[in-house]
Image (tube, rainbow, N blue to C red):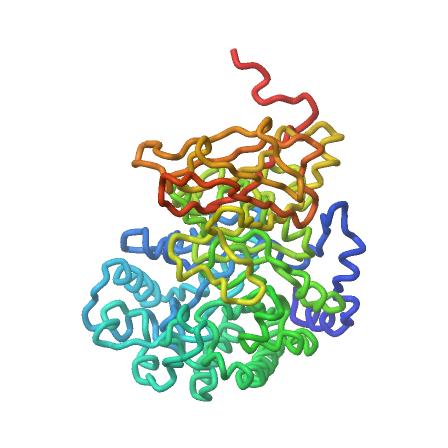
Length: 569
């Protein structure tokens, strides 16, 4: 589109014409299968350009075509938007920045071989006249993809004596330790690094502004994304009330920059913010999101269930964000982290991702984003199965009958990443089971199983409850779904007390209670409750019994009587 045509289109589009959530809801299909405008990004994939990418994995010399593999792998995948991490947490850039140091600019002797390789790649490309960010941006547009540049709103401090050999921190960070938040006596601060910089310092805000200004104005990006879901809050907990107006005023200036960049480039410049989904979390962290939406400072809310590096959660409550934006052009994107952290699977499996996306659209999302630093569930490059996963993510109607595993929020093995302190984040499993003390967990499900049952396309529905350190023959357990007792007649036990597989013993020890549900016990659309009660505890062993995992596996036939395989000999 030519610049004049773009400006005319922009000027002619009244807020109602741009497309409100009310208009989108009018086009909704059954069970929340909403049809969204194709003129805006819908399926986002985040990539830091390092881990599952050439900067770390390709040996030098790196050619421009090698770097562009990060974009090329998305072509035809079902992902329409690359969100690229253009900087590191220490303030250095992965491109030829004029306002920030490049990775490795201030290193005298390297102490990390992988970081050394990445910096060498960047410097060599730049020396040969190739700006890595421009290469990626131009390649996206050549292939019909949107390109959003992401960066951190805060930075992490450090010491040159310990961090200098990795190159991840700039001189600005080393020279301004006074900008660090420092000690905070709030109990919630235990899970947040004290080395993060406080956004209340004007000089620090100016440094961050220059970086985002450059990403909007110097490069033909389709916008930027502000990472507000990591190392938060950007001050002490008691100062978040002071942070709110400061951050909003900073965003106003950034929106003005975006408008000017739109006019000069003839290209739409979007501002997305990555935030926790629940409004109470916004207030706690000092994010005046209602003002951002009302004043049109942001174009989209990337809504995480909690903060970054939290455990996989398919059930983010998007209702507050949806209500807030329903009469605006601001879009709600469900931001999904695939960190599973289980012994046999590091990342969320295909049915888990499809379940998360189905829940997102049912909850009113305009789109879906996988927001981890890189997505490589089966290694890298991606497998054909990975492409199959991505292909469905922008299509709620196709997701409706895709196989799924809905799973209750369960912690990673790193307890500091639970994130349970944040408002709106449900308590994660595992939870202890004590005699006669029920434990209830929620399970959000988007499938209309009653409808699919009448169509004859439901293959099976299994509710699975994993308990640790328990022998069923010596203990008595009651399991209910939505108040209905699940009888032993539909139960199959899976013994994990001690099972060897190719890499060792499965852990933790225990049993899986697997119920194949008949139609009358199917979970309902929306919120479901699973309640587990230890009625009788074996008195001869002193171990902690835990409710470790709860999930519901839904499998479909493509058509009634269509069995796969049709015959086994």
